View 1 (cartoon, rainbow, N blue to C red):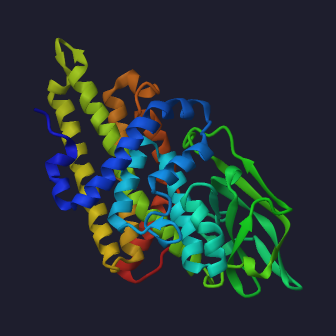
View 2 (cartoon, helix red, strand yellow):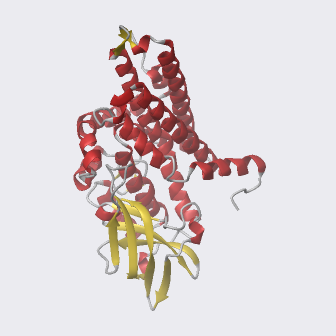
View 3 (cartoon, rainbow, N blue to C red):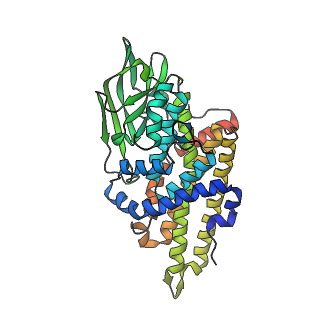
Length: 388
């Protein structure tokens, strides 16, 4: 009998019964709810975000690794495994969950006031309120310290002006965590999206992450009360801490996309007959499959190791960069190789591979580009920052 790629690495033996149970619940949801529909969502560029948010809230995955306020308080490994299964469905679905839980909710949970936490977190955990995270600007992606969005004091209020780009969930969000320059450095603000002067413009004509809402945020004289500021976040430490949470989820999530591609290619190659035998029976095909299984397993083992480090509070940002760099890179390479095994069929949405491949082109870039994570690791090895 054929062996599933990750079974070669006996991955389940590294997990607790509770972790396996939680993983399987998310896998069942993705198989039932996401996979039958996501090809059409990708094709049309339409995603039922609010409906899915409620369902994901009922599933318990929104902010699942946070404590209290309606959040499940699971381990980092359990959260990572959920990301794996969600991205096996689609990177856009995992992005929805990551932005909600690891960016917007995490920012409020770790840096917010008790009033901000009570106001937003329970509703966000349930999927009744959707959040977005406004850090990146059109001219400042890898260098967020140069952001131009500015918040100034006006009496007892704050007034925000600026714009943010490539913001997942922006058009459907009820609340935005927006980072801005102030006279006291970079600070974060909790911005209800109905606030006067706040607009979100959806980005169209994407060829990647089409089953995801991506927006530009525009803030024009957005007036907020003093208590809209996140009191515990000062400087880039705040947003970069949030990004590390999201990058950790990507290290797991990309394994799911790669796994779905590889299993699809294996199944296809066994059924596809050329020159009177399945193409899986040719040495060239088997070498491709074996090489991809090896990289997939290594990526999964790296992600699990990082998860254990995170649960023991020993993980460093450089180690998160290792996971994001390696696993996004290898997942994209696996998707491209699998697309080739399917030949012409590999470019259709009848199979998931081209969708995963296009999505991974974005995942490869966002939450820190391949180049930036390379330089983070280079600085760790040499002590010399090469990106300045």
